[in-house]
Amino acid sequence: MTINKTVLSIIAIGTIILLPHAELIPFFGYSIPILLFIRFVLKYTNESFSDIGFSFKPFKPNTILFGGLIAILTLAFMQLIFHPVLDYFVSLDYNDSGLNDTIQSEKLQFFIMVIMGWLIGGFYEEIVFHGFIFTRLEKIIKGKYSTSISAFATIIIFGFYHIQLGALGLINALVVGAVYLALFLYYKRNLWYSIFCHGFYNTMVMTLIYYDYL
Image (cartoon, rainbow, N blue to C red; front, side, top):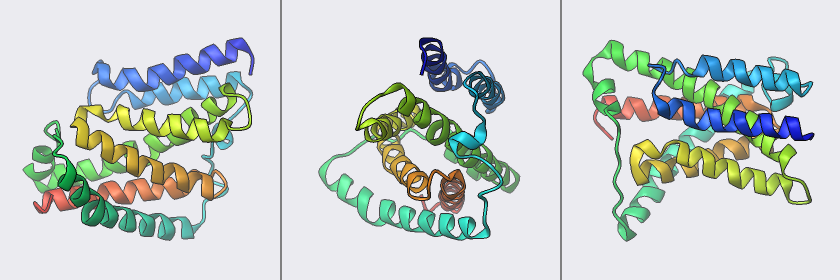
């Protein structure tokens, strides 16, 4: 990767991380300019969204099934094993940033948040983090361990991207983010598996919040 492409990729990664937290554009509106910026970067590097794992061609119905199944297993692990063990050793704060109240306020608001959980969580975050950021880091970081280092860095970035949710929310994002990235890599860099896993995971969590189980 040339110096110009490297600098542009770093700027893009920084924008992806910082713009949403700047709160300059309300209600997930930041996703549109960021996706357009990513498209520009990919075009500049002679790539397309298919080069970062997002294309309609590799989509198959079984991606829905496998994505949903892994989401169920991941949520079960987090709620029945990971969080109880973590709580036994340390007490961490969780800041829902008003998300729980929004979801529980009324049924229409709940459905809107579920839709946004798919559009922003399922599609946007998977394309941006585990598609774009991961593949940019792979190109920037040279050497034998490029993929491993890039994967670790992406997981850390994804976790700290959710720092507004507090320490517990950050750790939760680290763990489930690692699952999403692992799916992406295991299924030959096909984002559909992680998209559906992420979307179903968000839906189940918000449903549990709506019915006051979380």
